[in-house]
Length: 124
Image (cartoon, rainbow, N blue to C red; front, side):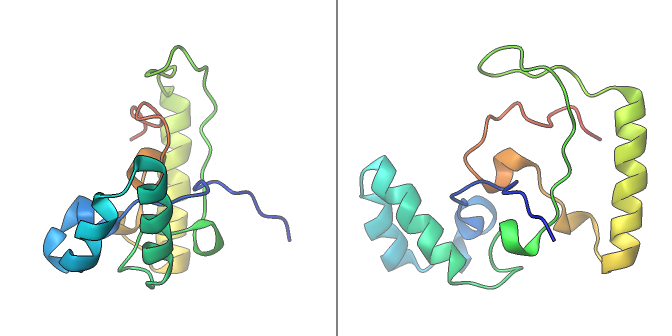
């Protein structure tokens, strides 16, 4: 079996992004007072101690779907084509059925890890 590291090396905090009331506020206050580099490493460590769905998926428990397009500049990528979106919708539907997933189990790269915000922005 081969594996790609599609999510990225460090994951973001799901509780900070979606529902701050689910965060350990004392711990998170200490983390957010750190420098950016230390902060993202500590958030990653805290999140990886949790199980999905209490954290975002990581490389070892997720499937990555790559849509190939040209990188235009620091914030933008080439728009996803209609055939790419059709294929993506078909594949997602198959994965939903096979793994008993739903739309809440699907994330774009920039939501989960420290990726370019423009990645997958036109995928439907």
